[in-house]
Length: 119
Ligand SMILES: [Zn+2]
Ligand SMILES: [Zn+2]
Image 1 (cartoon, rainbow, N blue to C red):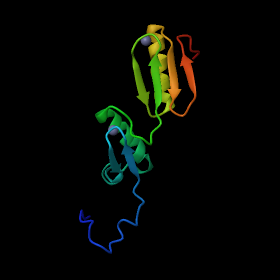
Image 2 (image 1 turned 180 degrees about the horizontal axis):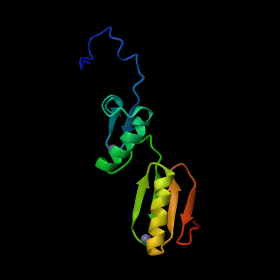
Image 3 (image 1 turned 90 degrees about the horizontal axis):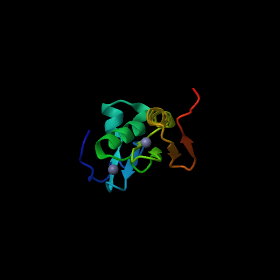
Image 4 (image 1 turned 90 degrees about the vertical axis):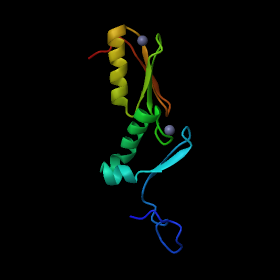
């Protein structure tokens, strides 16, 4: 609407329902208006922002606790927003290289995926 925010009396600041994301590595904060209004991703706005931030900035923003996969034998590693693609990465890497891959959530738990995963 308007980018004029310094006029007193406007209630724009009180309506705080646009979610925001911060990134300490970028030392920046964003609201998710672009994701909501332009990309129209609704309640996946944070997810979309996180994926775009990872793609373009190379890391996830603060609020996101990513799943990290790391090969125990080569420097290959990556981060994912959800467990499924992380596990798929680990299984694929193990399948093709025979390496053990550790799968770790920023929240705590970790598992190891090896080449003998039952399917
Ligand atoms: Zn960042
Ligand atoms: Zn490897």
